[in-house]
Length: 242
Figure 1 (tube, rainbow, N blue to C red):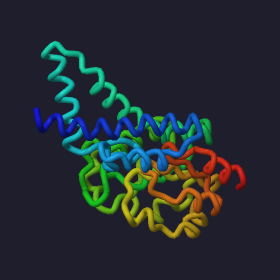
Figure 2 (spheres, rainbow, N blue to C red):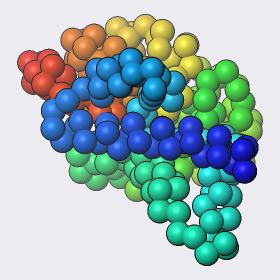
Figure 3 (cartoon, one colour):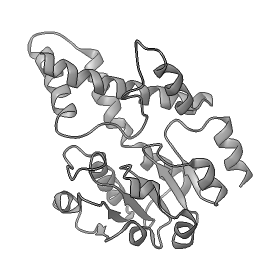
């Protein structure tokens, strides 16, 4: 129970901040500022308050589902854990919805996916958001090019056969109309964005699924940028001025 509780409590924090991020997008607030302010409360702390595409890996999804299942077989309806799981599943739809707002139909749209591992500095793709996102893109007719520094071999068997696996991030970005940052590897956050702008095709959409990039700078360079819970007044004003 201690292990299950710990590994379900942390996903609860993640899903909670992702719920607040969705609300921020609707009321014009900035999730970065909200999370920073909330994290200053010592009773809460800043850990696991990073909005994004949700959790993955071998422990959090499995143990959260196990605790929810345990409650069910013991005759208890644990609505909170069920909501945590549902929110996490929903987060994986965000980049798809964002691209559909720009392109309407994704058929034939070239998309680069940066990151296949569920978190940086690992080759682990178990329950990785990238796998679901790629499948959805392919089902909607998008042409997907993907790259991850360590996880491509582990991901290969789980990806649709028509996904192009590239040898570098810049190779994956060449000629694409949109990019989705799924895993915040440092080599992705440190990309030469002026060169990326030259490589990508219009309308140069970037969906920052980990809020790891400087959205202001990217919009200044002419990208159409969207993060998670980052559509507050400052972001909109800069975007509209481009």
